[in-house]
Amino acid sequence: DAASQLIRRPGVVALLGARVNEDHAVFVFARSSGVDIHMGRLLSDAAKPLGGKGGGRPDFAQGGGPVEILSEAERRLNTDLAGR
Image (cartoon, rainbow, N blue to C red):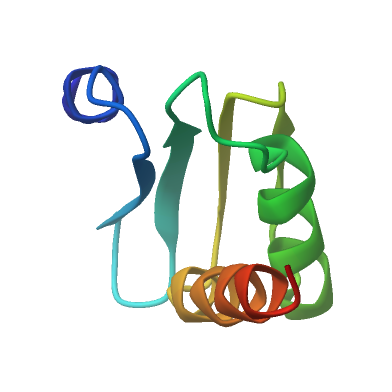
């Protein structure tokens, strides 16, 4: 619900995570309709090298794995945006 509320505004990318336990977290990545970033690909690319799983549609993705996935996704997102 939080991601859905956030992406109602234009130009928003939401990378949300919640700890399940000390070693594992769940993630929801979402974006506003006008943002050209594939959330499923971003989550999958950030999760795989760290042993996590995830993916989804261009506008919404879900997954799980180590907490570090969130910072890896943020790093990838910033790199992608800087390259545009």
